[in-house]
Length: 385
Image (cartoon, rainbow, N blue to C red; front, side, top):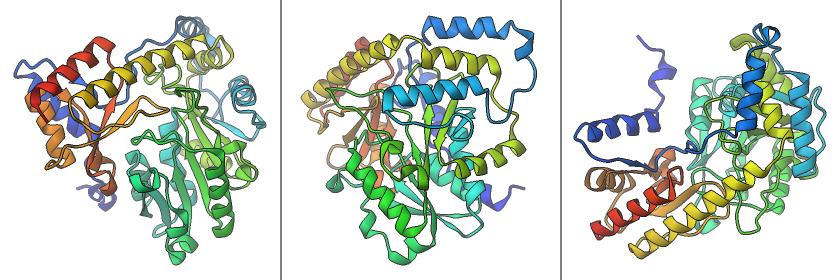
């Protein structure tokens, strides 16, 4: 019944976890969900108010433009200039997306033919691999290992593979490992892309969730980056807008036009009221972002300290709202995740769900209150892992 490309997809990790969680909930277990990275904090009021007012305007009830409102793209360009010191032309170097996931998932259809190769980090957000498969292309895993600080060793990629590859997916600050990089790494990426004629697709939704003085560089801030790639941004994590579905891509105009051509055939743009809410987010006071960061920093410290006192090996990340934690000796990532769910009512994401090289780790998301995190730590201590 289904096409071969659908049959070749792995089961979507988060959907499987949700199903198992529901089974445990039916038994009356109090679940603490540290699995999916979905902010529990509300969208700031000034953003909601802008959306409500815009939704009442009949001019916003019709089809939006495919590339997005120029006013939204101008807001993105101004935000990039202010926060990343990067200049992009809102006319042809910014594209509005129905959430960055949509743009990432559609990109392989613009640049990959059946059998072409995409270099996909492993472990990584599953969409990179799965979108490549849906485009009938071939994902080539690039290991992200602890020994290499969860960065791809570009020099170790087989020369013939690099010659055939057309796309390189990246994401820093990284999901799931929470790894961070400096600008010097992005310079290596630009040189690699130039040498092998590869398009770089940098997924950057966690750029503003940084701690302890660390500032996440934009890929676009590196000389030559605009010649080889684009960067995907999202309002989801920065402004607690996961359900609103609003994001953007910036960078190389020709690459963005390829994505736009796909989008004109598969969607009809982003609701203008949501884009107007996005303008309010990007151009309004950023105090709400600072509050978010302070909350996640507190949660990070609670969970790092609690897991450490429970005997688990965990490092304190400088960005994202994730912890990438080694599983105890004798456990696989799936077995440990199931043990936490069934014995302690705690949901975490097994590392192997993000790829082969994610084995040996689980991901904790800081998307519950400090009190619930403390409760989770007490439950884990009681397991004597």
